[in-house]
Every structure is written in structure tokens, then in C-alpha cells.
Image 1 (cartoon, rainbow, N blue to C red):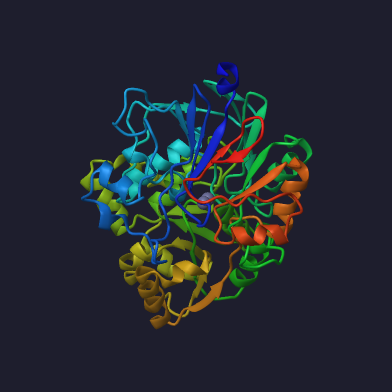
Image 2 (image 1 turned 45 degrees about the vertical axis):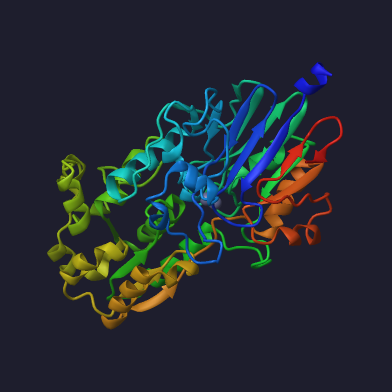
Length: 449
Ligand SMILES: [Zn+2]
Ligand SMILES: [Zn+2]
């Protein structure tokens, strides 16, 4: 009996079987326990946007009781044996956003660029998430945590440093897709994956963000670049692009459209710093001698925040590439600027840009956020024409099918989806729909417990 007991492998999706956001998967043997992701939910149980401020006053026990924090043994301060490792797939809040609650002695495994992005968020935003005790993994290089061998696979996703994972122990295997797509600027990573995917895994935990939304093929980033180019070509107008400062694929598309239309790309210190730091990992445009048409506007709120915290050096590093508001106003028709709502105060101080183009380049769902709404109203009052140019960070149905065909899993478990019940209409592989917190036992004969 004892040898058999030693071969047990189990997994449990703490959150994510019936929602997008707050992903957290626990995998364990008799000896070793690991977590894949530790995300902040995006929605409350009633469907409203999740607001952690409502729960700020609660302690860990209360947060676990209310199912805000997953009930994981050895993760907080409650045990003499800590969990053996937490693996973070990519730097989106819905995959790491609750990490502050994890015992500081727990080991974290993540990409180095992911760690940099999380640290920069602490500098530039009001979020403060400290992930310490880190080990950096690299794509394609397997690493061990106790009984487990984990292989990270590089993923094409709207986050810069994203991975899927193969998790193996005792001859059993799980593949966790993380968030991915195949129509971004790292499409080659997906093509490579299709040719080199691990075969016949027992369980594929497959994200289905777009299942139940649309079944059509998504636009590529290259197509986004073309559409941006068409808008930038209009004469006599400033172009403001409302995109996430962390969506590097999109910023590259904007930059390339600028090159094609002979524009100057202006960004604030936050985006400039992210691009500069990440340029260590890939060829990314950033303010430097190599990218002459990239300029930095020193904005009010970012400047104040950095100064208040004694971090002025992050401003000064871009002094050489500074563009003033007057200079922008004087050559508005040459300018493409990356903007977000906190920059309204700065735009108020730039004359002569009325009647320009505003390109909204994020998920439409964010349009209902009050600060976004207010900001777009402000620009509408200044007679801006609004264009929506965007493509999803997630796989379309065709891409999901390609991943399944490449891996040929024995079972598929829906995760990161609101439509797990629709998987059976798309894939011929057996679908195992779990509930949050339900244990899947992968012993000799797999059983739901
Ligand atoms: Zn993501
Ligand atoms: Zn996600």
C-alpha cells in the first residue's frame, strides 16, 4: 500500500474553473506541493468588477473564509511545512495579484522579465506587490521542485513574458496552458510549440477566455499595425493612442506604424522605463540613440509620484530624450502619443491638438470604467475622432484546437473561462469540467474526489 500511496498525484483548481481571473492551481504528490499562479479575481461573485479595497481590513483567515484567498495549506503563516513552490506564468494581475499574502519564505519561480515588470508596477502605480525569494526559469529549460519536473514553454500573449508549463511526476503529466494566442508578435513561439509540443499528456488545463464570445479568427498584430498606419496617415492631426503600457506587442505595432508614417512616438516615463528595462530581453524600441523618433514627455502625476518617493533618477535617465508640451503643440501633426487617463492634466496644457485622433487600443470592456469614461468624454469635448483598433490577447478557437491537436491530451480541463460547458462542442477529446476546489486524483485509475 505504501508504495502505491507514494505515487499519488492530485490537482485542484482553486479558482478559474468557471471564471476568467484569479487563476490558481495546486498540484501535489505525497511529498511535494506546488501552486501554478496566484491571481487576483477580476469579478465579484455577483459579476461586478472585483475591488480588493472592500476586503483590505480582513486578515488571512477571514479572506480564506470568504474565498477571496484560496484555502492552500502551508502558503500563509499557518503551518510548520511550507508549500514547496509558487510558479507564476506571466505578469498579469489575474495570475499573481494576491502574492502579497504568501509567506515570505515560500519560493517563487517566474521569468526574470516578469519580476521586473511587477517591481516597476510598484514604482509607478499605487499597487504594491512584493515577490521575494525568487528563482528565474527560462523557456525550454526544465527545473525540479521536489517530485515535480516543470518545463516552461514560451507563449505568445499580450503580456511580455508569458509561459505555459508541463508538470510531470511519477509518469503522469499535466499541461497548464496559461494565457496564450497565436496572432501576436510572438506567433513564432506558438508555431515552434506546435512542432515541439509534449505529447499525450494526461490533463491539459486549457484557457478558454474567448470561448463563448466569438468564434471568428482574430486580427494579427501586423494587421493592427496596418490599421494604425492608415489612421496616422491623415494629415494635420495629432494621434493619441490609449493602450496598456505593458502590452509590448501593441507598442511595437504603434512604433512600426510611426516609422511607416514618419511620426515621432511620445511616451511618458512609466512606459519609457518599462521599454528600456525590457530591451535587455528583446529588440524593443525605447528612448535611446538607436531609436531617434522616440521621445519622453515628463507628465505631472508620474513625476510627482517619483519625486514623492525619492525616485527622480527614473525621470533624469530620459532627460536627453525629453520633449516639452510646447514642442508637442508646435508639431502636433507629427506626433503619436501613448496616453492614459492619468495624463489628462498634461493634455490640458497642450494647446492646438483639438480635432485630433484618439485610438482606443484595449479591450472594449474597460470602456465602462469610470476614469476611462471621463477621459474619453474629455477628448470628445476637444473634438477628437475616436477609432477602436485592437485585437485579443487570447487564443481564438482555431488556435485552441491547434494546441489540442499538437498535445493530444487524454483529457481537457477548462480553466480561465466563463464557458467550460461549451468545450465539448469544440473538442473531441474528453472534457472534464471541474468545480473550484474539487480534487482530481491521478492515481492508477483517475477519480474525482
Ligand atoms: Zn494574461
Ligand atoms: Zn489571465
